[in-house]
Length: 224
Image (cartoon, rainbow, N blue to C red; front, top):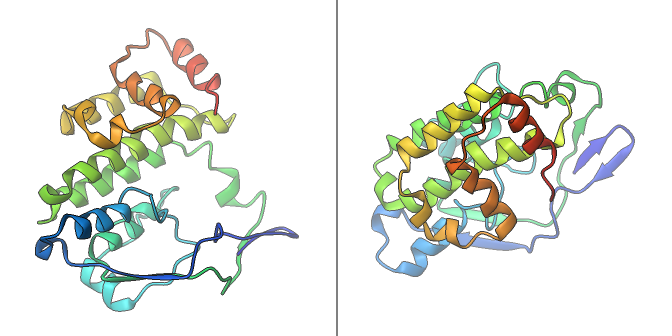
């Protein structure tokens, strides 16, 4: 349950009460078991914010995750790796605690200004994932998650905040990173399954914006 000043909103999104049993990736022999694991890694079932989850201490210690210091948009570096290894996930459609958000606070007032923290955190996460022994088995889903979060979300989040600014050189850097690590991203089945509006944004990986003004106009005019 989120509390915004005197307004309350549920963070449960009407999920069903359900227990999921997941097998270790290196022990999976049935494609259905791998597909289920992937659904926890491609945002089909869960998102990677920290405000609606309770974790076992043993899992956190096993995966050895930490929140990055002094960065906004920090949750995925902590949350996402846990779903690579979690063996039991219970979705509970109930509000067990309140998460208070105060408008005008440091957190809420700097979301736009700190937009570049978003891809920085996602790149830190990619570095973490690349070192996992499970990486090759999960590359297809890690790839779409990274393209989505590092590139698509950064652009879309910037379009939602008037004070967000992505320098052209940093935008080019984002494109270069995506091509460097995932040169065949257009062949990814998850990419090809995206609806047109979302795919169109990813396809700007192939675009060369000639000026800061052109990039700013593109971001400002995005429609959802």
